[in-house]
Image 1 (cartoon, rainbow, N blue to C red):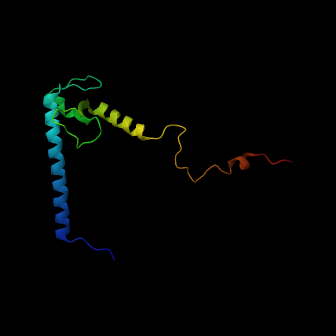
Image 2 (cartoon, rainbow, N blue to C red):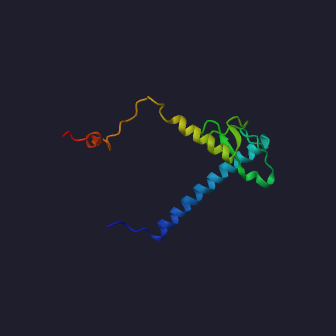
Image 3 (cartoon, helix red, strand yellow):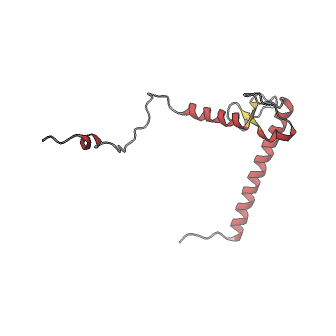
Length: 124
């Protein structure tokens, strides 16, 4: 029988989650604020300019994709609009995939294995 969580377990979990969120927001606020002071409010890819009204659409991208690497000089950051940031992360994920022709783990299921035999016309 599964154990039911008590009120204290649930409260403890809520505290842990809230603390993790607070720390993440604090860390992000720290490097975001510094990046916005260091760099002009322009997307580093599409050159879209930002003002106070739409600044929430300008993000800090970590060039090495390590969010814990935040040197004080900002050398690991670039400001990107939300659209270019998404594209950059898509490129990064795509680059991690094996190239065509490289060996991947072979699939074991062959859905069309018997298709050739089914398509052959019976001889009369």
